[in-house]
Image (cartoon, rainbow, N blue to C red; front, top):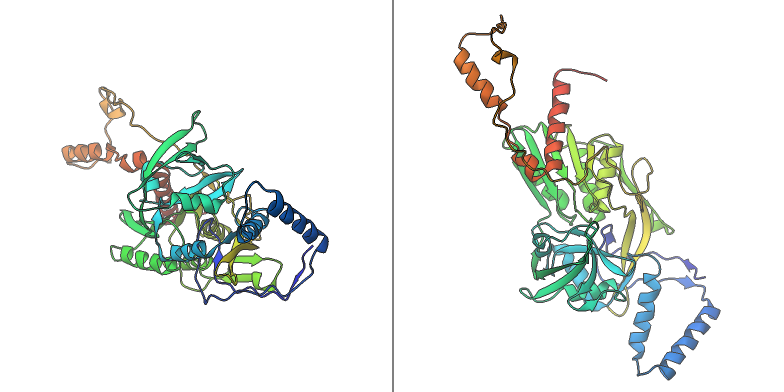
Length: 441
């Protein structure tokens, strides 16, 4: 066994996304400190190494063998620990800027295949119909089985305008799907907002970047300029995660006090606690948080914190279940190790790892269609011959009839476009009605 003592990891970035990045510090390689070397294991390693160098069908460079050995050692730990060469490390740092080249999907590995955690909004993959949970089994004509995640990601990146064919296995679809996607420069706007109806705001976070917390505050301030907010829908669907500090900042925006999240690992630096500060940016107005199977890591931190504090109703599907933190540790050759160093826990002590967040109000993925209109309107009491009149009715019957007919018209546009969002809006309205009427449990 290898015993590491006195290790103080230089936290170049704390990652709680699947393939995401964090805030960066100076690039200095970390030192592992004192290590107990497993000589018997190293002896076996050297024997295998010598056999490859002597008997393999063709010569293999020493640096490739050693790098592959490091990759194998890390990939055997968990799906999120990996070795990054210098090029991959630089690409990871570029990802924090919110602009990079590629398809626009967050991915992980599952059973040797690339699994789509979530497509990023308004990217080529999103518009091509890639869905959370898809398994990518071929990239163009090359099988994914046997590739490392980094190699697969590298293949999916390329010159903007160049096409790639993804062969995808999707749950509920018998035959694999072939989806052609044209690469583009991916510019991620992590926060989007709009007013759904008078007083009801909508806030969509597509990923958690270093400035997402500030962007959330700015978006809410803009919505407030159009009137006081009576409720807010926070949409974290298909949000694959990102920077831990951004998840803390977003949670803090809606909480007045208390623990947001804490992390626990083997080394002291991995044990951290984050607490909320005063001032709820929407003044305690009711909230609904939308989640689904593509909501991972940082999204789950936010949903878990707001759920534990009973600050929001969590609606949708069970989340992805990534409850671990990755630390980027630069190496002396210009690369880095992305190593899982801690698990994170919600304020009540729940571990999200492999469990996810269970919604308070489950809603499956459904698509509504408008029912055919009947030629005959339903008969009401007022249509019956000789019906008893309403003794409290005011004068101006014709105007009232016109108003009644107008109120019977229902705008189903939102329900048809986004059923969960429509249900979230209805729930916010219901909460406000209950509060207005002073109904108590």
